[in-house]
Image (tube, rainbow, N blue to C red; front, side, top):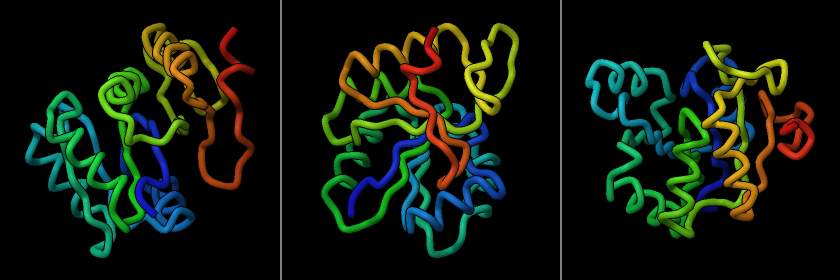
Length: 161
C-alpha cells in the first residue's frame, strides 16, 4: 500500500476530518511532519492519545534526515501511510528532498489568519503557501483542495488567480 495520502491541514489531527481520512484511506500509520509538534512533548502526547490504538503515529521535524528516512521506508513497506503536514511550504521542501512522496497534495482545512487569501470556503493561504502550491505544481505535483474524502475536489489551477 505504502503512502496513500499526502495531506496538508493546519490543525493536523482533529475530529471528524481525520476520522474520515483514517477510515476512508484505511490508514494504519501517520507520519506527522511538523517542527513545533515534534519538539513539544505535550503536543506529542495529545496527538498520540487522539489517534486509534491501531494507528502508529510518528512525529518528526520535516527538516530532519529522519523525516526523509520515515517517508522512504513508508513508501516501500506494506503499511497504509498518511503523511500529514501543516502547510504546503513543508511539502515543497520534502518533495525536493525525496522521490518517495506521492505526486499529489490534498490540502484540507487551512485557518483564516492575518495575511491570508480565501482559496476555498475551508482553506486560506498565505502568499508563501500560494507560492509553494505553484512550485509544487511546477514540480509535477497535483495540488487540490478537499475538506474530507467524498467531497468535491478543487484543483489549484482553478483557484490560483
